Figure 1 (cartoon, rainbow, N blue to C red):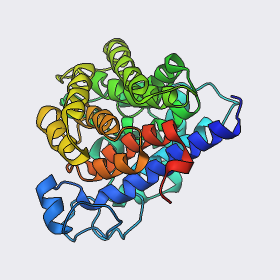
Figure 2 (cartoon, helix red, strand yellow):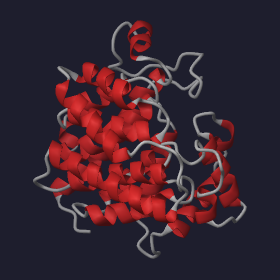
Figure 3 (cartoon, rainbow, N blue to C red):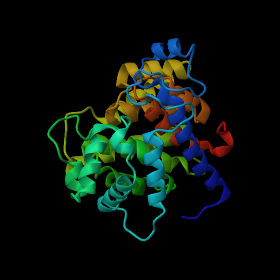
Figure 4 (cartoon, helix red, strand yellow):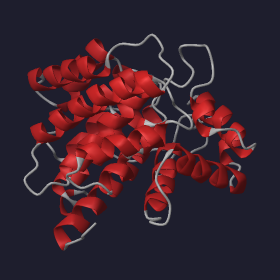
Length: 320
C-alpha cells in the first residue's frame, strides 16, 4: 500500500469521523428521533453525557468512545500486521488476544451478546469459523457487530473493492458468521475502499456498498449460517432512495427508519448507514449528525456512515 498526503488525509478523516460519530451518537442510543429532540432540546450536534436510563452507556461521559471505536481501532492495528495472512483464524486470534488483556467486554453492556459469547469461546481456543456460525436462533450472529468494525479493512484496500469484500468476510466469521452480518460488513468495507479512490463520489461509494452487500450475501450463504433476514442489498437500495427524497439529513433519518429500520440487526444498521451517508452528501459533519439523530443504534450508524464520509473527503473537512 503506497501512501501519499491525500491518502493519509482520507484515512485520518475516516478514523476521526468514526470516533466522532460514535461519541456524538451514543447518548441517543435506543431513543426515537422525537425523544432525542425532546431530551436534548433539539438535535444532537454536540457531545453529551449518557442519560441514566441509557441501556448500554449508563455513566459514559460526553465525548467518550464506545465499543464501536474500540473494536475499530483494534482492527486498524491488526491490519498493519503484514506478517500473517488475514483469514478468519487471524482475526479470531486478534479478538482472543485483546479479550484476554481487557475486561471491558465482560462488564460493560455496550458489548452485545453475540460479541461477548464469541469472545469467551475464542479465548477458550474454539475454532473461529465454528464460533461465528454457532447457534440456532435467528438473532445470534446477525447483529451489526462485524459491520461496525470493518472500516479499517476498507482503509487498507484503497480502491480495491474485491479485496475489501474478501477480507470483510474473514473479519466477520469469528463472531458474526451469518449471511446477513457478512453482507453488512462487506457493504461498509467496500464503501470505505471505494471512498479512498481519488475520483470517488458519493454515488460511486454507494454503488460499492451495493456490490459489497450483494457479493457478501452470496458468500455468506456458502460459508456462513443462513438465518431469516431481509436482503441487505435491497435494503440499501431502499435507504438510498429515501435519502434522495429527503429535504435534509433529519428527514432522511425518519424516512430511512420507516423503510429499513435503525436497530441492532445488520440488515437495518448497515443500510441505514449507507442512506445517511448519501443524505449527508459526503460531508462528514452532516453525516455524523444525521447518524447520531436517527435514533435506535445511533452511535453505530453514525460510526459506519462517518467512516465513508471521512474517507471520501478527508480530515480537512472533519470538524475537530
